[in-house]
Amino acid sequence: MQADPAGLPLGHLPGTRYPDARVESLDKRFPRQGNAAIERIATGFRWAEGPAYFRDGGYLLWSDIPNNRIMRWLEEDGHVSVFRTLSNYSNGNTRDREGRLITCEHDTRRVTRTELDGAITVLAERFEGKRLNAPNDVTVASDGAIWFTDPGYGIDGDYEGHKDVFELPGNVYRLDPRSGALGVAADDFVRPNGIAFSPDESRLYVVDTGITHGGPSHIRCFEVAEGRLRNSRVFTGDFAPAMSDGLRVDTAGNVWCSMGWGDPTEDGVRCYAPDGTLIGKIRLPEVCSNLCFGGRKRNRLFMTASTSVYALYVNVQGTQRP
Ligand code: MG
Image 1 (cartoon, rainbow, N blue to C red):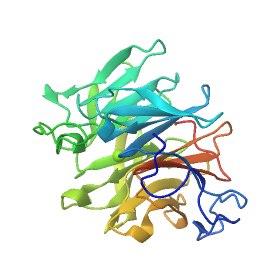
Image 2 (image 1 turned 90 degrees about the vertical axis):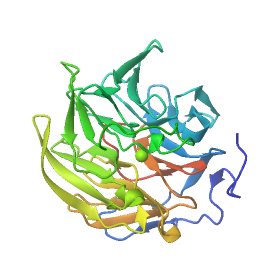
Image 3 (image 1 turned 135 degrees about the vertical axis):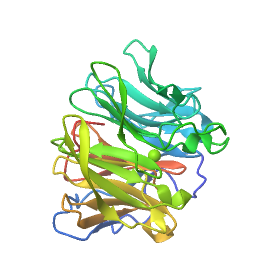
């Protein structure tokens, strides 16, 4: 499990010196922790995605999609083990306001909740009688509404799910917490992907990875009012030939997004101020898929990146949503 396909050991990256030159500040607002450096905390996966941190248990979960499993890393001693197999080729994970795990599953084309006793409840698998494509990423609002994206990468082929027919466009959905009704929140994406709210939930950020299918490579921002989206605009982009995938927001409203693919010099994470200014970069040795905040003080950034998971302490806290 701790094999080393990218040729790097676990722990701090080779040549570490403070401040870590791989953590690049472009603006004084970038909340860098000067005497902290990037650590590689786990490796040996095929495509790590969907990190979610459990402060109560002191562990990080993430999906290893092609291996059809969810992994767990214990913060106390760094132990890595399989949390769930078979995971139905799970992708994005988060927690709801009661701390329960919410998971996007490619193979079963659904969103599930893992109850506190381990039972799995299906939250969404169809819209107007048609099967969802392959839900990708998810976040939960403070009112309990579950917002998720459904680009369908999991049915493009047999590596991250199974090849299957699209029955619906790539929509962004909102699952109403009271009625359980599923509604389309946005229907004009090519491939909606990472999704996160601003701290006060007045804004919703959604990545479009449409570049994989002839579309854009950017992050959009919506105003949110009474469970509906309005006033769509491009928050930042164009990332081409690179693309983002997952994102999270800190308590200062900064948007942290993964970056990778088309430009190897951009592999890692970018941080944007709420006004859209690029204020910092974290350079990783692998294509980054997603990230989340965690640690006892929510000031540790966990980054799933291709075959490995990386961590970095930063001088800001993530919002409560893991
Ligand atoms: Mg994703």
